[in-house]
Image (cartoon, rainbow, N blue to C red; front, side):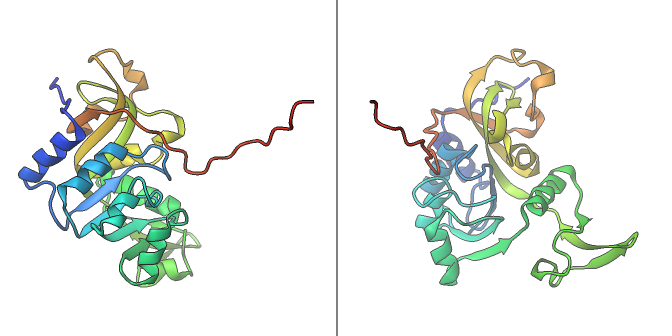
Length: 241
């Protein structure tokens, strides 16, 4: 098996930029939910390439000073395909000022559109959104007495994902809820780069524990994650007697 370990996020993104994979106007998928399971160092490296007019598919856009919020600050994102935008004031400001195009999706529909893209399924029917604004302009159909909306797949030129552990062949293991959108996005990208905390040798991961097979991964980078907390919640302690 090929060794897919890249030198650094900066190195792999600059290499892909030179090859024309990373380019203006491309579509990018970025894993994560809030700040949980985001490919934070790859996002920084993508920002530093200077590419613009990006369409970014992600559940949300992180927060104002971290994650995809960094790309919003530099106005490199033209369009977001998302489900939730509530934690990013700059996201909301650009949207309300008509400076950012947004395609909103019910969260389950967004997840299934991405999964369909990775599975090679160009469209599917779902009952979610029927009779609402979500269904406007879309084909609808009644099946066995229930109404459905036709939704199209989502695919990306580049998928950036985050995993806990990888071997040198690119087999990935995610950690608990940090798995979120990452596995399906890994499969839906023409080129997929994984950012990981821990690298092991080929054969060190039990095949039964692999969440994303290395066949979907083009390169991996080992980083030290800052693991920021999106909303810090603490318990008030009473002073000692």
